[in-house]
Length: 227
Image 1 (cartoon, rainbow, N blue to C red):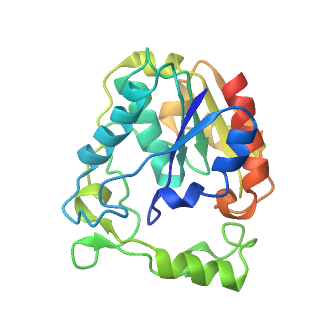
Image 2: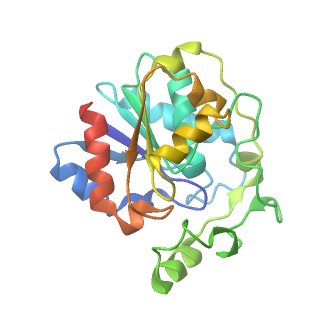
Image 3: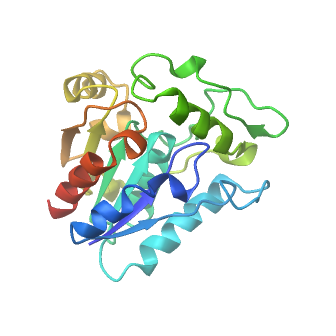
């Protein structure tokens, strides 16, 4: 199966470099999606541009792909399910929950000089970054790409209720499936609360398992694709 891989804030498609060969070895065709404004120098990219890039990858797939979104990009994966419910086999959401209709894509950190920069590790101390050693942190910080303001502050639009019938697996890195289930039941993710085929997968990692646990992550995604 084609598995579309969408990285979160500050990351380009190379974030999946260690996951791709593992998925290939498991018999799948991983496709890291290059997002406008995250690695191509398109400082004027918008959220609509990123959605269009994801949908182009969905439309190019010969069958129904699994769409994987990491962190903030769980919203991009969910927007693909909304725009192409008949063409998406399922979505896997790693370490995040999709924003609802009418909400800004990423409005939880400040904008500086027209972009959302990586502001260092202070906001992520604790379970998020506990499994990243200093070398990994330095490598991440040096490669981090400021996200254009028109992406970060772009408004999420969802319109097709058929998205709720697309199978969803919530991959739980720095939190547990029990915590995720509790948060959803409490109304903290109104989109996933309405999903009719919702499962959970646990991975013992911080917020970036593609960096620290690529093989385990690949196996989880392969299981989701098989399901």
